[in-house]
Amino acid sequence: MKKPCKVIAFLTDFGYEDPYVAAMKGVTIDICPEAKVIDITHSVQSFDIDAAAFILFATYRYFPQGTIFVVVVDPGVGSERRPLLMVTRNYYFVGPDNGVLTAAAEDDGIEAVINLENDLRFRKPVSSSFHGRDIFAPVAASLACGVEPELFGSRQPIESIKRSTVGIYMSKISLNCAELRVIYIDKFGNVMLSQYYNSIANALSISMGEEVSVYSGEKVFRAAAKKVFSIAKEGELVLYENSFGLAELAVNRGSAKELLNVTRGHVVKICK
Image 1 (cartoon, one colour):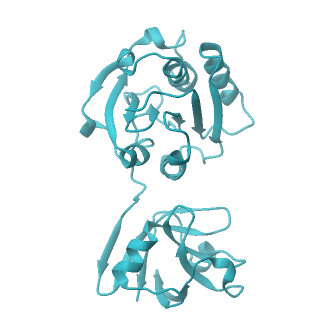
Image 2 (tube, rainbow, N blue to C red):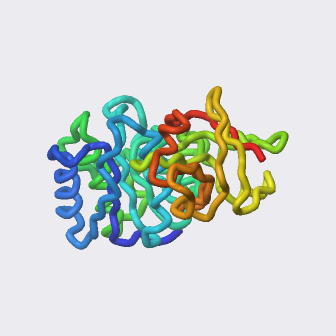
Image 3 (cartoon, rainbow, N blue to C red):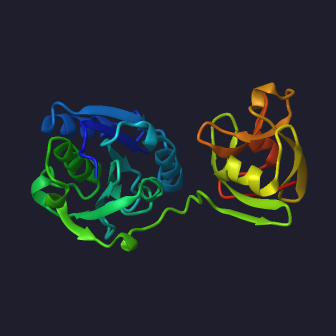
């Protein structure tokens, strides 16, 4: 277990127009003035737990070891869902027990799960609808300034946490084909798939420059395996290893999302 550093990274669906993000930051700095507060994003679509889970998974490893991540995409705020602190090999994750933390936390290796129940560490009074300000931010700030994780509440069985449904690592290999789930689509229309590129290329014996068939719904498309989409012809569909190591489909100067007519959660099949 790494000691917490003073970096606190926020990820929410609050947007930038409303007072919520500023309130959380104010509480954080009030409790731990030396904390360095960083925004991952606050532009997650409202209530989109899977998108937030993927963004956290894709970014956490680039932060200094000991970073504390506060993730508030919490449509169940005020209900029976638990507020949690997950301690992993190298990081700390604070947020609701709704799956938003688990893809990243499990990837790093969970060492402890703590139910946040010691209200001495909360901001008072605790709002039923704003745990980001009154529970999660105060816990993260206290952790950054030296409070031991065990003082926030009781340990919970790791197997009791709610898992993410984002589908990272999901794949089914058979008959020279791989079935993969669309786990994220960025603003350029690039389609990220649920397995590392090298795993798929090795399983299907795909060489660089080789063409593959991509099945989406009732249609089949041809895609070239390339190092990057920018070296393809304009409008060409490309299968490549994206910056996170995942298999991705992209169209040079176009949108793979529109071409393939997919949204997150769709299954596409790539065949040798």
